Image (cartoon, rainbow, N blue to C red; front, side, top):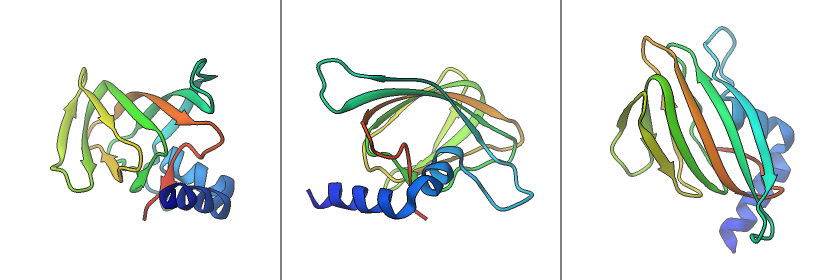
Amino acid sequence: MNRFRGYLLTALAAGWVGILIGATGMKAEGEPKPKATELLRVDLEGAAGMEAIVQSVEMPPGGALPKHYHPGREFGYLLEGEATLWMEKQPERSLKAGDLFTITPGQVHTAKTGKTPAKVLVFRVHPKGQPVAINAE
């Protein structure tokens, strides 16, 4: 319950700015910025208060997301390119096109690209009304 209160307070304090930073991976001016495009958001029938969110995330060469976490479960499929996935208390994982990954709710993580861009299809099972991502930096 304390973790839920933390999510709620963070969401209220950060507002839409926090959602934008977490969802799009905004960085300092002049640095490459990942782009998240929402493709679908639907209520999950039979799972009160839950929704499914599907996004396409495009990461430019040398791009990185800020460390963040999600209130729901995340599933990802790397469509193009290569990326490195870092999750707190786990070894880094190199991903290439065709690789799948999953991230548990509340797991702090980030992803970065090297010299080539990457494109990821992300599917989330998400508590409705919660921010898509919460910045952990």
